[in-house]
Picture: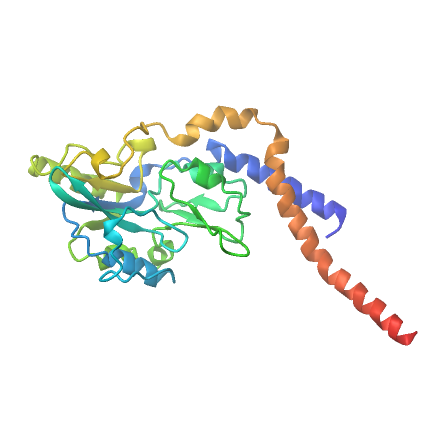
Length: 296
């Protein structure tokens, strides 16, 4: 790649970075059309079959659920475990809660990503493209649920998180965790259907559930929604997030930030491409020089 090509790639990437970090980068779609998962925590028995299925489906850590004692301590997701189940001691006894990426309808991580590695897909899941990721970790700092995780111990670290088994969805299958659940704690479907089911359960059993569907309105709505028998703050959920999508908070700021700040990631991408193209030429020059020395 010559200088002109480098500058062109940097400019293109910079333009993409600027647009992706604004709210307008996320195509405004009707959340009613998205798919997601309803999690009824009153039905979860803590078997962690969902954890095992996730690990097997994505070549991640497959936990030894019978012997690892993981439920005795609070856990967060990691680059090796995209979802975890925690146990909470509540006023109504033990409650088991599955946690993973919430797949927000206006995802802060996708809005903050300068290379569009994070993408809010048309079906609803928020996916991640490792080929585009530059490891800047903006998605980590912007996520209100702290779900994207960084591969700190890898030589070329990237971000890892739940993708709602997007590849399986493309093949007409349900997420692996949903298929593995033996108690129908997890129900996969459209947002409309999931909300209908959740509201019906609350209406039919008002003494069994708190009258709230977590994720219906939080941060503008999420792909994963939850039912609970106890207040959500008792089972590890943030209740201070409000209903405004997080990208809305940064929209005006991002429009005001100088282009040079957004150009940094773009510059790095362009530099990487330039070095990659230059490397074979340099190696050729070295081999040529070595040949001349041998002739001498």
